[in-house]
Length: 245
Image (cartoon, rainbow, N blue to C red; front, top):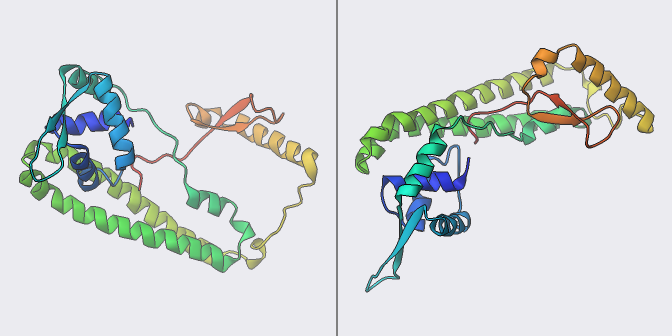
């Protein structure tokens, strides 16, 4: 998602300062998109330079002057055009899955601890989103945006489904690791002996991929080809999520 379009969306609700935009981010969309003031102010400057917002200085006698940003007609057209386009699916990097993928290098207990930490953090996120779901109606009423309730609730629904699924996965993974044979853990190496064995492994991977082309169609993550040339890439599936933590 483009930060500038998120800013346009908020400013479309009404004129705001950079600080107010930060507060709006933190209290509405932080469960799937966050932004820092160090990102917001440069983006506002660019939007102003592009004619998509205009800035007026409000003079205050007892406080620093306020820079208030309002959306322009070109800005509103840009926002609507972007909203109407099909959403681009971004690749999501999951540190927990990399840790699990190479989990044989850990002791069983260490891997269980990693998975337990993931489960605990995800459970906390689920609780937060459940409370947020109940809070939305009161929040939009308090700020006079009752017509936005459905759309905001839908984003929370997505976050809840994703995090509940991740919690179920992590709890299931813990049980499977506990039941696994101890001999598969704390392996320092797996018998690879230089470039030739790696090439053989990559060639085997290519043969496996050739058996399931339908599953690979449209994927957006890449691995180097068996020849090891970085400019030749082969598509492989990726795990994507609709909402980030």
